[in-house]
Image (cartoon, rainbow, N blue to C red; front, top):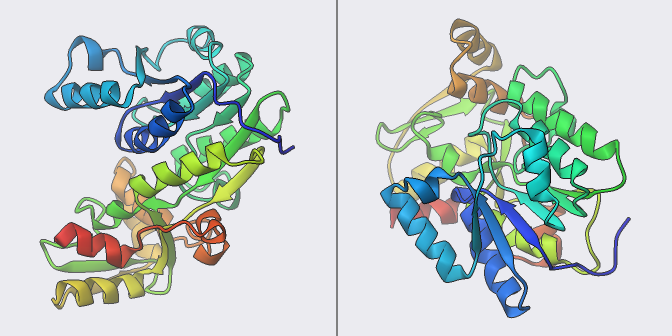
Length: 308
């Protein structure tokens, strides 16, 4: 069902990491203008024993006018349910830092709390296409979250599919583009595609989707900064940097063999997943941001900004 208007009262964002802060920076000014409160849930340690980064984050949250709640997401389900019951809308930006099973536990607590509207931590690939049994335990759990949400009708849900964070393509540990070493690896084949979006764009677009009228409900909404093949990525990197890179295609067989040799290696697992192609990309022309005329940063623009 699509409701007619959005209830802005009592909104909770889970997590103030890279994505959580991007959402809060976009959302807080909009709610403040409407004189509506916004709360963020953070790990208690951020308030009790803050690092230097935590101190800066807390200061920014206070400047944004966001109320801060220190709660451990590893608390039992009943305790989380009691917290969530105070809110009409929950936007989950926690990621996988709290370990396996966390996303199912949070989702069950949200449903038990009769939260009216839930944006789960599904900011990633198309788990409907990936399905269960991909060899990625995290992906399996994400698929199960979708099944759970679709099995009920009391809580509205919205899934925002964003693809990979654009910066992850340039993460040395991921080893697709290594700017320092001058290497580029095509996962699966040079024609394999991947959809990417910057956290800042995810924050802005999630805010637009959250506040859209008429209300968006019980849907997967696709967004994208760029959809690019690894071959095209290599062209963009060489053109923008003005350098020749050493290029190698890493086939799915090679990546699966690497994973079999090191089954506990998280990056080997991600490389094997993003070599699959299916479920890892969608056409940018079909996305919410393109339909609504909302500008997002493509890979070339991201890289030029990063290098400047």
